[in-house]
Length: 276
Image (cartoon, rainbow, N blue to C red):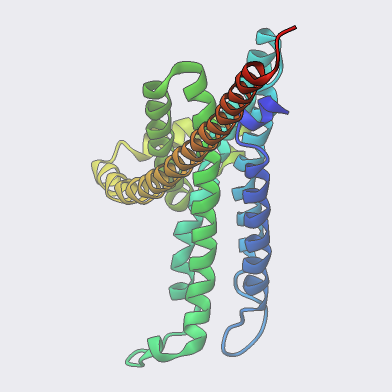
């Protein structure tokens, strides 16, 4: 149990349960949101996209379990493939940011109308914004969990280098998914074909410039969210550690006082008692 606590449990379970609760709420709105003329809900695809966004967090939990295995050989043999799977699926979480385009694509906006005054338009936009924030939260806590393992293994510098590299690769992966329409399954099933087509795409300098312009924003948004989360977590742990130290000092002071009073009472009894 102590080793689980060193990895942040049971607090992690509480956080994951809260995220799951908000996932259910968000998907309820995704299912119930309709276009003005009714018909089939336009954002049912969010259910699948959010499921994919949860996969990296599930794999991060599995990496925690593997980390607790005593055998280093078994730990490496299991941790490397699971870690690569986590990296392949990781962009799916923050990818939900890009789904914000769909209200402007699917909601009927007539030319010359003040569509932003229609409550139904805001229902559409904020449903997708909620899903995007959920994706950012899942991406952030998943990376924080794996970052913790890397920091324990290689130190603080290695941990931060890992986190920044993952966010850069994730930004690129999100670009591939949104504009070239690759996904994690394509990379797993046809890695050679994906690599060949991607290299061909980036032989065009305009495509490279387009990619850089898009990826810089995805990286800034995800890095900002991660730094805020990391800073708040550090503040929380520092506060908890400070409270623990103050609590121990109070206990020691109370114990020392009791011992001092007991010594004084014993000395007084020795002085007042008659000699034999």
